[in-house]
Picture 1: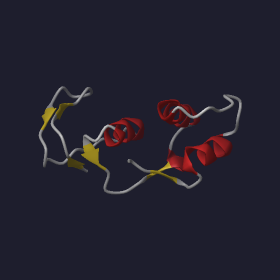
Picture 2: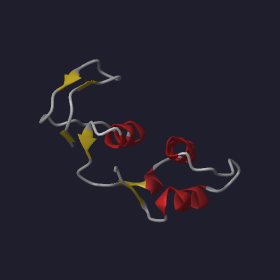
Picture 3: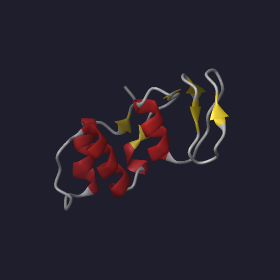
Length: 88
């Protein structure tokens, strides 16, 4: 995915420059960077690939209330009602 704004990668310590390509296998980290406007997601992250804990963290970031005992499918619906997690 393309870097939109310069930032230092928490995982590698590398300074990422706007225009470079950023790669990570950490879907939660990618989603965070997309939401903050640092990178542009080429493709949406399928929410089915996220763990229940990751989905709950995204809901917390959105300020969405949920039952922590809810099933993963129920939490996915709260993310936006589709099967993708998209950056704004």
